[in-house]
Length: 134
Ligand SMILES: Nc1nc2c([nH]c(=O)n2[C@H]2C[C@H](O)[C@@H](COP(=O)(O)OP(=O)(O)OP(=O)(O)O)O2)c(=O)[nH]1
Ligand SMILES: [Mg+2]
Image (cartoon, rainbow, N blue to C red; front, side):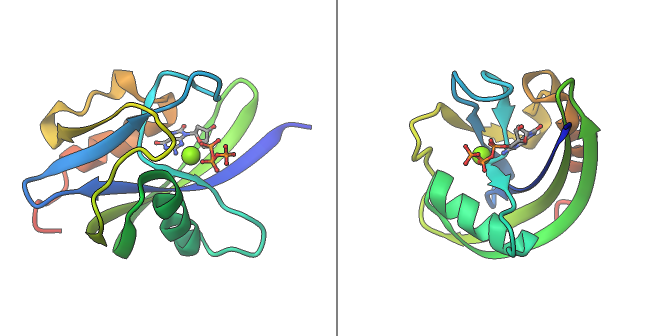
């Protein structure tokens, strides 16, 4: 049966408008692409709880508030995914890639859709048009 995956991701944005991104590991689906940290919603978990849990697990921050931005649906060759994206501007800790992947802070204007999975395209476009005050 075709897989359906639901995930929550955080666009971690600093006060000087840089975004923290990580690179997907070698043996994962979509290996080598850059991504916004996040992961799968578990059974009986709210999407917001997934966001908080995944950002603690993957990049070691405690999210104080996430502002819901957009839900994106996309079909890859072998699976359908639903991505719930949140803007994260308030957190405790210093983000780093706990699982050893490459990571970097990137200027919003320099986010390059070609480095991300196809599902991220419309989201990145939306981010570039976001009011900075949001
Ligand atoms: N985290 C994240 N995943 C994305 C993005 N764009 C995108 O298409 N994906 C896809 C890649 C994967 O198929 C899926 C995320 O699944 P995952 O395997 O990383 O989930 P997870 O963190 O819960 O990992 P795991 O515990 O199953 O290893 O969503 C994105 O910006 N961030
Ligand atoms: Mg993940």
